[in-house]
Image 1 (spheres, rainbow, N blue to C red):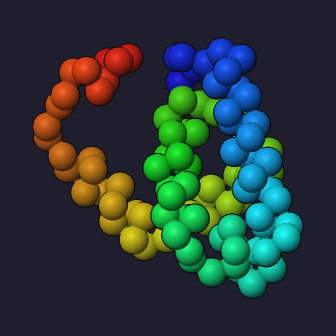
Image 2 (cartoon, one colour):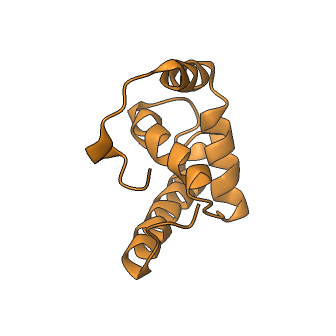
Image 3 (cartoon, one colour):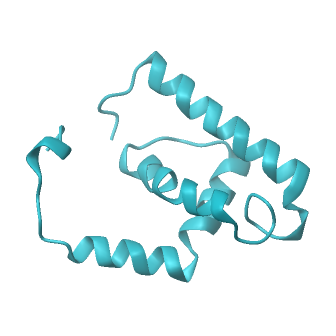
Length: 97
C-alpha cells in the first residue's frame, strides 16, 4: 500500500472515480453497477477495482460502494480465487515485490 503513488497516479484515480460516479448517477438506477446491470464496462473495471485495496487507496463512498458491488460478483470472486491459486511469478511484472 502507498507504493508508487504520485500526482499523476492520483490524477488517474480521480478520473476513474469521476467516470464511475458519472455513470452511476446517469445510468445506474437499475442496480449497483455502472449501468445498473453487469456490462462490459464492469468487466473492464474489475482489474482496476482490485488494485485500490492492494495499494491502500481510499475511495469516496459512492465509488467504494461500486467497487464493493463489483468485487462481490460471483464471477469476479471466482476470478480472484483462481488468481490466488496461481503459482507462476514473472519478476518484471512485480516491480514492488
